[in-house]
Amino acid sequence: MKRGVVFGLIIFGILQLAKSLAAPVDEAWLVAGFLAILVSYWVPPIPGEKYVAWAGTNLLMVIGIYFCGFKLPRLFVSQVSYPLASLLCILLFMFCWWLIVARRTRQASNIKR
Image (tube, rainbow, N blue to C red; front, side, top):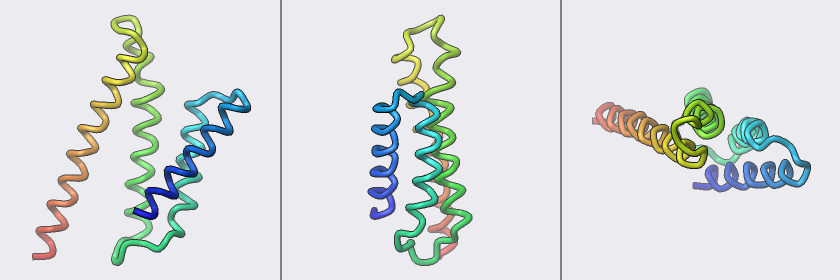
């Protein structure tokens, strides 16, 4: 929970800074995500969680949101509006992410038995 709050605050701060400097929001999201991963790792970890697994999962999440939220919707602008295309791409990403997290959770619970 603490890591999530730190992660969110860093991303929010960098996106607000990018908005005030008129920087592209999509690249600001990517930079903010990478910085948030590096900084939020130093918050006390979940016992038994390895750095590579934690950082890899969060890195995939940041890159996935970057592509699905900012880059992929531009391919569908000719069929639907950009906000709708962005929403559909993010929903698809969230569904895929939920499947991955549910699978990891199920595997972890099977290992503990």
